[in-house]
Structure formats: C-alpha cells, structure tokens
Amino acid sequence: MTRPVAALRDAGLTALVALGLFAAMIGVKTEAEPTGMFLIPRPVLLTSIVGGIFIARLGWLLTRRNRPAEYRANRRLAETLTQYGHFAAPLLLAFAVLLPMLFGRYVIDLGILVLTYVMLGWGLNIVVGLAGLLDLGYVAFYAVGAYSYALLAQTFGLGFWTCLPLAGLLAALWGVMLGFPVLRLRGDYLAIVTLAFGEIIRIVLLNAASITGGPNGISGIPRPTLFGLQFSMAGGPGTFAGTFGLEPSPTHRVAFLYYVILGLALLTNWVALRLRRVALGRAWEALREDEVACRSLGINVTVTKLTAFAIGAGFGGLAGAFFATRAAFISPESFTFIESAIVLAIVVLGGLGSQLGTALAAVVMIGGFEIFRDLQDYRMLMFGGALVLIMVLRPRGLVSGRTPSVALGQRREITAELVAEGRG
Image 1 (spheres, helix red, strand yellow):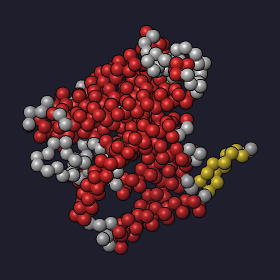
Image 2 (tube, rainbow, N blue to C red):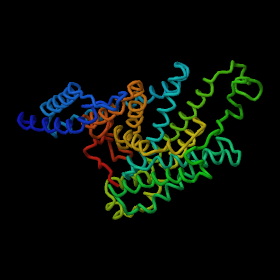
Image 3 (tube, rainbow, N blue to C red):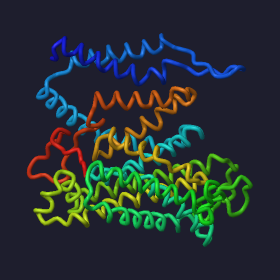
Image 4 (cartoon, rainbow, N blue to C red):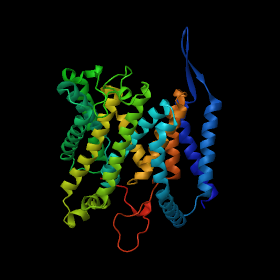
C-alpha cells in the first residue's frame, strides 16, 4: 500500500498535468458570432474532469498491491485467459462466420473495417510483437499494396485474385528495402526511420501525379468476382444474383467482401501461428529478447530482421489490396501516420505477441468507438482517454502473457514481466 501523503502528492501532480493539458482543449470553447470569434470559458467541465482524474489516480495508488503480489495476480490472470481462450477463439470464429446472416449491412460494413484492422494488427505483430522491431511506418506497406492492385488492375486489366498475391509480394519487397538500411538501428532511431519511410511513401504518391493520380487518387478500381460472377444490381446472366436465381441486392457484394477479408485475416493468423513453431519464429523471439545473445549463438540477425519486415509488409500489402477493391477509390489521404499509430496501438494494447489480444483490441478500438461517431467533438478525446486508462490498468496489454511455442517438459504461462518489451 502506498502511503497516503505520497499518494496525495502523486495524485495532485497528475491533476496538475491534466489541468495543463486540458485547459486549452476543454476549458474554453470557440463560438462563431457575426462580429467575430469568441472564447467561451467552461470552468465546470474542466474542474469535473481534472477532479475525476485526481480521484481516480488517488484511488488507484491507495489500492494497488506490491510488486510480488501483482506478479502473482498477473500470472493467475494470464493462465485464466489462456484457459478461457481455448473456448473463446472458436466462439469468436463462429460468430464471425455467421455475422452476415444475423445482421444488416451497417454491421457487416463495420465487421469489414474491424477485420481489416485485425489483419493489419496481426501483420504488424510479427514485426513488433515477435521480432521486437518498432515500426511506425507500417501504413507504407498498406499503401503499396493498395496502389499496386489499383495500377495493375487498370493498366493490364488483371483481376483481383491475380493481383492480390502480386500486391503482397511487392509490399514484401518494399519491406526488405526498408529492412536493409535499418539493420543496425534500434529503439527510437528505428522508430524515427520507419516513420520517415511511411511519410516518404505518402509524399511520393502525392507528387507522382502522372502515375498515382496525385491528390486526386485513383477511382474506378475493379471489384472482385466470385469465380467470374459479377455482383451487379442489373441481374441476368454472368451475375451472382442471376446465376443463383436471387433478387439482386447490394448486400450480396458486401457480404462477399466480408468473407474475403475474413479469409485473408484467418490466413494471416494461421501463417503467424505456424511460423512461431519453426526455427524462424523462435529466432524472432530470441531477437526480441537480446540481439547480442542471438549473434553469439550463431543466429543470422540480418536474415531474421529482413524476413520479419518482409512477411509483416506482405500481409500489410494484402490488406491494402483489399482496401482498394472494397472502396474502389484510393488517395494518399487514406494512408497517413494516424493509420500506423492506430495499428500499433492495437498491437500494444492487445499485448505484444498475442494473436487473441490483438483481435480483441481491434474489436474494442475500431468497433467499440463507433458508438461515439455522433460525438465528433469528443470522439478522439474519449479514444485517447481509453488508451491511457488501459495502459494504466494493463500496462502490458489486454493479454499480457502467453504459452511458449516450444517448452521442455510442462508448458507454463509466461507473464509479461518475464518478456522483454522489444526495443529493436
């Protein structure tokens, strides 16, 4: 238990920091009048929020346990989550398969968005969660996949299923190109370089107007087909509705896209789980823990890093190709840094290296915050507040422990305190 005086001091400093942060954002509101712009003070709202933060911090400091008790509690929680995870994963999979049959178009569209971020999270989890390489420019591979599909489809008249693996391979190639210059970088330096790489790709797409369309983007991107059957509202021969004798409906195409991204996400999960059990996956985890020890054991660190970048980028490219065909329009504004930040937040909040945790974090962060869509003025504030709250309560993520891929004798759950954070 923390001493009350120290707890009061800590909570007071926290409230003071909150006051400095929120004084300009929440304490005043801009109102447009015929004579100009005026600032309306909101002292009650500001005081309520700062007071709530003070009380929450004080309560947490007074009730938290000591570190050994926390470690034991985390181990019990990790073992419980692993036990229930064996039942939760099949239930979540069954719900995902049946979702288009149970809900309308809005929920299906939301499911497509969530599954896209789940796939991106699982792809980035290979780089950050397993190999421990901090990547802030993952959106670049997402953009490469999207533009690769759009340009190949419109230039050569290729279909979605032909361009999909090509988009993944091109994104993987760019992953290798990023990996070579950053082989000797770690931590903050690696993060800065990958962040710059993501911005370079976006600026190139913005300025290469003769190829990418510049700020106007690329429109009219072909839609995928089901064994050559088009999803058209006209019906008739050669369409999905006409072939199966159904009434044409836009829900057919949306449901088909949902199952496409569900299949791609499951493929990403299956490959990631299989790679963990082979020598390459164990080399990634060893690299995350200690690069110097890896070198001393004879592990080729260069190949290990490049394969992590390439495979993670490849899955990002597949997700980008799906995004392009789903929206039928792409532009550089769809691939900003905020996308990389959201995907990285999903991986960190879910728990580094945890497949189930990443999926749950994507559902909570992308699907859960759709509730606040009508509150545009406060949506990002609530989003940031929820991230801070999760980081305070679960600093290692929702699922902070996991069972080792290879164990000698009985497998025991590894809690987050025994796993390196992965600073690359």
